[in-house]
Length: 165
Ligand SMILES: Nc1nc2c(c(=O)[nH]1)N[C@H]1C(S)=C(S)[C@@H](COP(=O)(O)O)O[C@H]1N2
Ligand SMILES: [Mo]
Image 1 (cartoon, rainbow, N blue to C red):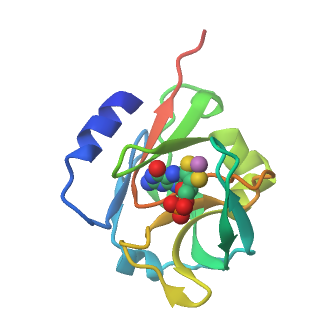
Image 2: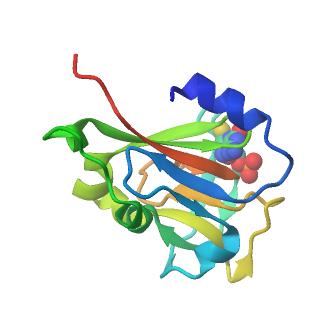
């Protein structure tokens, strides 16, 4: 599915659903509620400054998110490599209910320190985050600018294999 379709489809979802799915080029698609997410092994992120990439406006200091590593969920779903080397062109498109989306690549997640710090967060400073507050939030704690990937109300992670040139 391309990102335009992703936005159109998600924009019609009823308000404040908090389940998200991991689907696309996987063996076992996952659909998880916030409660199910809480049952996984979790990690604690470091506080960070949130600054808007587009406007350069400082937004706020964000506390310590707790969440599940994206790589753990990908491992559970299992990647579907149909041809040798497919994973080298594999991307993870993470979209929210409002159509906002960011990408990760397979190499970035599994072959750089980014993967260790890419979390799907459901708690901040020990307090549960509600859907109204943005949960689940996909957050990339190893991004080096104060405008990290930070997707509120994550709805879907779609695993795609890009065409070679
Ligand atoms: N779902 C979703 N997540 C999003 C956005 C958005 O529009 N939708 N905007 C991003 C941008 S551009 C910024 S700067 C921050 C804003 O965070 P705030 O809404 O808590 O101020 O969230 C990011 N996450
Ligand atoms: Mo932003």
